[in-house]
Amino acid sequence: MASTYVNNLRLNEMGTGDASGTWGNTTNTNLELIGEALGFGTEAITTNADTHTTTVADGASDAGRAMYLKYTGTLDSACTITIAPNTMKRMQFIENATSGSQNIIISQGSGANVTIASGQVKAVYLDGAGSGAAVVDAFTNLSLSGTPTSTTANAGTNTTQVATTAFVKTAVDNAEPFPSGTSMLFQQTAAPTGWTKQTTHNDKAIRLQTGSVGTGGSVAFSTAMATPAVAGGSVSGDPGSNLAVSAGNLAVSMSGNISNTTLSTNQIPSHNHGVLLKSSTGSTQTNIVGFSGNNLATKNFNNTGGSGAHNHGHNLSGSMNGAPSLSGNITAGNLAVGASTATINVQYVDFIIANKD
Image 1 (cartoon, rainbow, N blue to C red):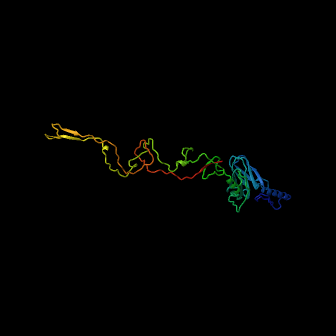
Image 2 (cartoon, rainbow, N blue to C red):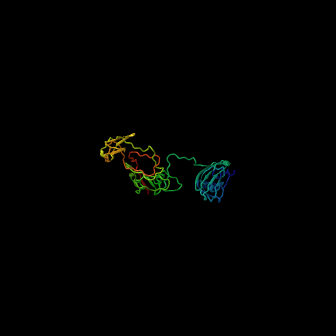
Image 3 (cartoon, helix red, strand yellow):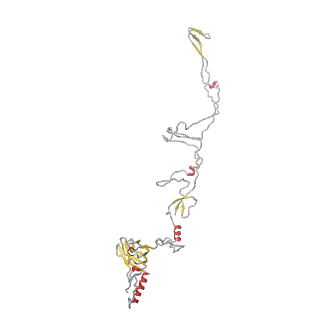
């Protein structure tokens, strides 16, 4: 009976009476191949090949039977690697160590395959289902229970190794989300650690700006917002249609009365009174006070009065505060002045500006 190689490691299974006199040699070879299967192997792919076949030889040494198989070579596109024979069932760790940053695609038959990116390693198993054989990513649905631990990398490590919670916490604690020189507002008197309080700006308001930022103004915030903010003032310039007063919006009313006053002779304007000394009624003339003739005559008495000053007492009441003035071209519109003092004692919250060290 002849030897067969139907096992998953392609070892020589000797038949009855087979290998007479060489049985020991065959056995030793099988043991060596088992060692290879548990070890590490490297196989080169032809430069820029699109396809490649790895065949595990029957009863002979080859890299393809190794548990950890590393593929090398230079690729300019993805390469599909078929592992034969398609009836072999086994577990393998396969590394894509090719240059050119291309993927390798591990296949065994027409079933599913597994893609391994350049520089990556995957654990796969071959189901050995013949022409329809599939390759499966063994760790796709792998889950860990309990609290697995690992070695913590040094702070600042930037590799593909797994990060522990200790590494992540250290990285977060040392994170610098703001670049040096960043300016921020803080509602506190002292700047936080890692920041320096800015003293350039004090007692100022904040203005939102969509363009370039800057500073301006000349009056301190506390002065501009003090109480009272307006004790009087004036409006000047040529407001044109922008400043307007319409009838009825500005009015003054007063209450009370003015008392009667009797004028003295000296307060009456100087004047005289004429008296008719001879009169005529129709065709008949009458002499008055011994006057004769036909002429009409009048007689003036002496002047009296002196145009002196006088006044009228009153009890009118009313007031106007401040000393406002209004000049310019006032047109019809909506300007109203109230008889009160404006109060602008606005509430506020203090902030500081600090720069990131």
